[in-house]
Image (cartoon, rainbow, N blue to C red; front, side, top):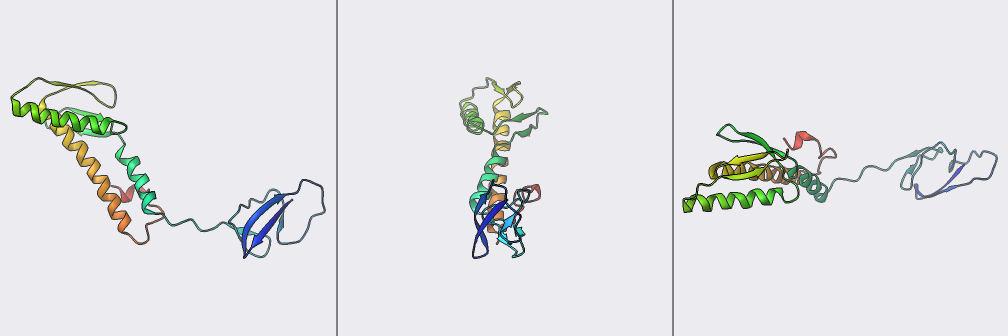
Amino acid sequence: MKRINVVNGVVDVIELNLSIEASSTHPFVVDDATEVFAGYISNGDGTFTPPAAAAPTNTDVNVERERRVNLVVPVYLSTGKVFAVDMAGGGRANIGDLSIMAVIKNGAGVTTDFTFRDANDTNQTLTNDEVIEMGMQAAASFDYYYKKSWALKELSPIPQDYEDDSYWT
């Protein structure tokens, strides 16, 4: 049997009484199979309703955005090469640094190729222009998710299902 301490209609404390006692008809004594947690709201008849879900915050949206900006991004180069890039960890910074290096090499007339390891651990041989194009696509993906997060944060209230793909695609 569980004894529920209710303060102003909201469950404050739950006690489990392991001794054998006669069942009670008191509205705040429930059988052990009934799930009740702190914060539940008493219906006054021995049943309890879970509290309403907290409204999502800008921080919640930021967490979902960070999850999405770290996903693998497919790259489709104008030269016909197709591969995926890893945006997590240092992947995004690596792509940015390589892109800057490719711009500098182009300016200096250096045409040696890059070897880039994609998200599937496959080496890709890329020209300066292909590295720059890869960098632009990776940056566009990053920028896209930031703008989607801004749009979500401008909604009032932020929808409970803010993690749904429909808000991010």
